[in-house]
Image (cartoon, rainbow, N blue to C red; front, side):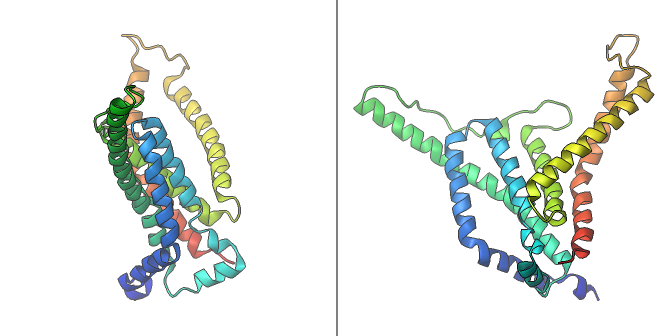
Length: 256
């Protein structure tokens, strides 16, 4: 019975199918990413945007084939369970993509620093003008602090933000039949607006006021913030599994 639900052999064949169909595309894509990282290797905000936004596009298009009659029927006819197909989707859009981004960042950082220092030496000897300046190898993606008390460092924040975004947009790729990225994005804006209203009402009920001035005699807001921070630390890691679970149920009930 368990083999009918999950089987490692079928799962391996699904991964093999993925790379067999997209090997050349993946190779070109990651080559381009490595080149981009060569130029933005020390620009932390741009690197974070590239990793997160690139990942969202990647996740939002993963299940695009299930929304057209021809490719959708072929996909659902693959002799594998929906759980196995979803696991492949989760692994490829979340863990594989993030790992490849880190690898291409490392390659781009090494090559970019090496090429920069070579050019700096050449233009100093030949031209005599310092157009390029020698620089030491930096790993800002790993070493940069974050300092907000919830995440220990920037890399930790980037990882959970990435996984959360991927889980949401993977669900969007299953749920929406067209323009999955934009449809998911606008849906999130609506949800965020509604949650903001709920948060404002909650603060009003708990504190009884919208006066956020903290004094030595009134630390209600400070204590409330500490409580919220503790809750965020616990809840935030449950967000990706929640959306993956919803994605499973949505995929199982999907019809062509």
